[in-house]
Image (cartoon, rainbow over all chains, first blue to last red; front, side):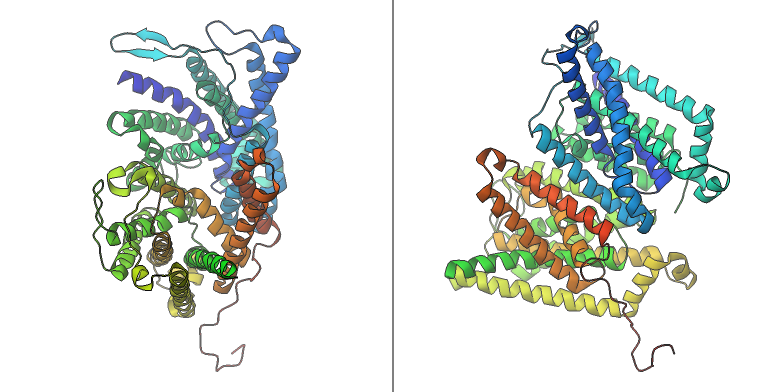
Length: 304
Length: 319
């Protein structure tokens, strides 16, 4: 029981990171971006590439840190992967979404995002192969925290959880204490009025994509560290991440954080009552339950 | 020669079945502006429902009621309608994102359930035990396939005529009114949520019909038939053909299905063996590129929506 709860929290931190970026983009550009989860894949694979380069060029930093399987090289790779994925998100927006946004409606955007997701996922599969990858070949054993009730946690998972919390805290300061945070909220509230007040729309949109991409990259690496890296990361995570944004309320960053943990814990706890084969359907049940009870989520506001 | 004809019949049967599903999507997306991310689930509900009702009893699963074929087909459509009704009622009063996410979720959940609920759907092995009507009477598989092709085309024509009539009726006018300006329609005393629900359920039932015909053709359905890739294919067909135009939808279905099978054939002939496993990957890049490319350069499709004047044309234009 407690094991499921802890597992849920650890998965939840990954979903939260993904959901924050998604909810910000959905709030600002007003479309459900089905390609957001592919940014996790881009992040996970970029980190894999950077890690490979560092291990080859600077073998001295590829030693594990303490009990973690994580190396200094991978830690540095995470930061680079975050930058890389943020940049990719901006480029994808500039190449595709911006053009469709300029002439089409929100429906075309949703539709295009599916196409973008298909392209990204399969191009990754083409480059890296359909097989799975791992950041390290070392087997990392879970540490037994308590025997009764049995509770085991991998050190990497704990690192992922804390790193996620630190990233969220940094984002909180960015959004609540800086002029950029105000500009972001202003644009999401009323784009025309924000522009009249001298906010450059394109800049705010680009920074939103960078933040969303960077957070997704971190989530992708933490997911890859705990599971495997494969081209279907995005396909597997798109629904749980959407569930997290809906639970939190579309547009609410803090809702997305909470929503991620709720979906993670609920999906993990569902294993107690449902056979594990059914777990991919759990986020859908959560979405349906939220729409039935509280359609605008925990912190969302009604908006058409 | 007979080989070529039987292949063409086979190809056209599948393309016509998919065209019916594209017509269903056109009612939802083209005419009403509803985003359905779970076409595969509604298609699958029709196929699974039909075999469940019309198949013979199997020892290892429930169902197999041996129902009279037309009843089984209609039963499958009704099951699809109920599924669409539940999803629609929960999501259609909210902003459009929710419908996209919920329908996408339905498809994921549907595939997951049919893969796991072995006692109901046969699990990953799929569902057998359906005997195609008249197959024994016709005897020869070649002639049976031709007869079945004629039946499918008749269904396609019927759906086409029904939808053409529908979009020219006051109801069709209402759908476009809601798509273009919901508030204006509301101010005239119309109830957008209910009308959207009707359109969504009707479109889904048409997809259920397509699924039922597909299940009949193969006398078999498995989780492989309800993968998300089906949804993407059907979307590509509609966007290439032209959202809002029923003839375009049918043309798009044939065109994309031809491109899909041809690309598969060419790659399997030309590509070296170690690249063959990436066949699906390459085809998905193709579909994704078609979707994105069409949206960027020709969002109205090859055959754009025509302005439908639903009033009788006795008046000269402008009066």
